[in-house]
Structures are given as structure tokens and as C-alpha cells.
Length: 376
Image 1: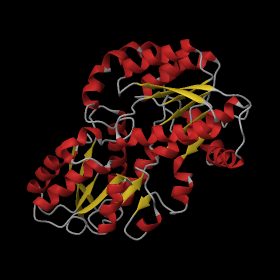
Image 2: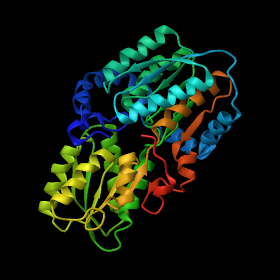
Image 3: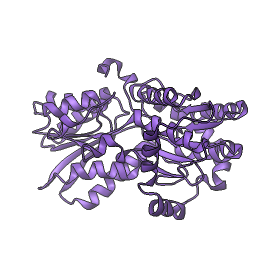
């Protein structure tokens, strides 16, 4: 990880850059542009499809891609695919690029990267360009769920070529979107709910919590806030005394948590959805003369190399796992399966990948940290 002074390149996946706030504002125009398309079904509720996906596909997608990859089956031809990425220029997205490169080496396909750089309007143009270039299939990481759904329905789906989505669910689906060859992701509502619940359940007596999140108005911030609200309802001992965006930036987190500690010097817990941002929170706790991990417990997300080190040292109590390499690697595997006539047609849950199942939890703690090997 880069030091705080260079934190603009150390933020997470598909929503992982300090510049994203500007990009989101730039993307408002495209959100209006795709509004008509969204009305065709992307922005409308899809509860029945989501429920079917939960009941029929849970676990099967992950098992299928893992089993297929173990066979080492070689494709019947060399395929050309488009990697429609929301980013490639921060640690998470760089690691995800390595994942698709590893899959290309194993399965012999060619791929072209389209980097939207967190801008929905740029991604809309790139989707149209990719369709015009006639690729055999598409690995699609939406910048945001609603415009991503519109792009898929309006441009990618009509090609008749398989599309695998990754990073965030779209079309108001909790996980798998019916019609795509697979959806591969870790980060969804259930994931953040589990992370927040894990932190809150440790409040055996009344405790005060400060939460920091990403950019206001982004998909991730909305999901994060929902997780906090459901956690508050389930754990009455918890009082969230500060809940502020920190823009995935450790410098902002330093200020926000510093303010929270001045207003509430008896603060017990800090929760965060990204390890690099959490570094700023830890620094604020130290500056307040308190011991992180003991006086103020810290629950983070990312399971990066830096995060794992902090957990091992006892400065953080937990960091939940992200798997950027596996995310793109198995998205590519799922696309190869579809191109070879064996589509997954299901949700591929990264929480069911060996890196997690061997640990037995998405939560990395001091007790199990030695069993986990972060790759970014």
C-alpha cells in the first residue's frame, strides 16, 4: 500500500479512488441519459427474479467454475473477449487485472481492456465501441448498478454473446442477474451486513460506534448505510454516534474519526469498509492517546497485506476479505464455460472460494490471520 500522501491510488474496487467523487458528479449526466433505458426494467424492482436466484442458484455457480477450472479443459478455439472494467489503476483493480491475465494465459484467449476510470459516461461509450468491434464475449464490471444494467440490456444482451458481470450486482438483483452467463462478486448487501453484524455483536454491553464510509451517493455508500441500519436494529447495545463519509481516503478518515473522538472520548468501536481508509482512523485513535484494537476496537474490510499486518499486531480487531484476483479470474473462467456451451447461469459467490473456506470465515482476526495469504 502507498503512504497516506499517495492515498489517491490506494482505494478499493470499482469505487476505489479518491477521485471517484468527481467522477460520480461527472456521471450524473449519463444517469439521466440511461433513465429511459432503466425504465424498461433495469431500475424497476426485480424481487421475484432475485428470490428465484437465491433459491435455485445458491452455491451452484461457485462449485461449477471451481470444478471446470480444475479440469484444465482447453477451449476449442482462441476467443477474443472484452474486459469492460470500471478501473485498472489502483491496487484492487491492478490485482484484478492480474487475475484476468492469469486466466488468459491458462485458457489462451485474447482480451482487450476498456478502462472507464469510474466514469459511467465513459463506460457507456466503451460498451458501444466494444459491441461494434464484435468480441466473442464480455467481462463487464459496471461503474454503477443502474447505468450498468441499462448498458447490458440496451447494448450487450442484444449481441447474443455471453456476458459475465463482476464486482457489483446490477438490475436491483441481490446477486445473479438472470440472462447473464454468471455474476461474480463478493461485495453485496449480505456481505456488508455480515461485516457490520460481526463488529456489533462484540458489544456485549452498551458501546459507542463511529462509522466511516465511501462517497455519498455512490452504490457502495448506500449499501454500507443499509448494513449499518440493519445492524443497529439487531444490536440494541450499539449506539452509532458518528456516521460520516470518508471518501475511501485515510486523510479524511483521520479528520472524521478525530472529530468523533473529541466529541465522544469514550468511543468504543470504529467500523470501516476499506483497509487503506482505516489507516487514517487508526492514526486518529493514536493521536487521541488511545490504544487502537484495545481502547477503541477497529473492524475493517479488504484483508490487504497492510490490513493483515495490523490485525496480526493487534491494532485492528478484524478485516473482512476481498478477493480481487479471484474475482476476475473466475469471471473469465465462467465466460470460457459459456463460450464452450456450458454456461453457469448463476451467482458465483467469492465467499465460497477456497481462500475463504479454508479460513472458515470472511473475517480475518488475530487468531486465524496466519492461515490467510492476501495477494494485494
